[in-house]
Length: 79
Image (tube, rainbow, N blue to C red; front, top):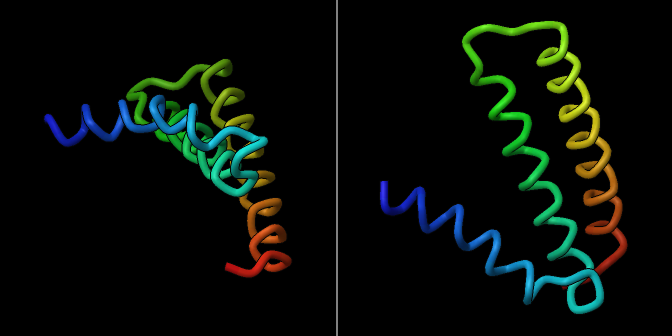
């Protein structure tokens, strides 16, 4: 339980460090994590309506787009 709380808090704390201007890939990672969390929340619902299904599809589309952008960014940058 405490680890889960810490993981949720670290995302918010990291926003100050991994801003778009400081770390483009770090900022992209935070965006991917947020979309994943949205997708996970939508998928965890026990009862789905047309609205929740649409929200889940939207979250999946955003997550997929960010993952594609991230994989292209990683291929062009060297660590």
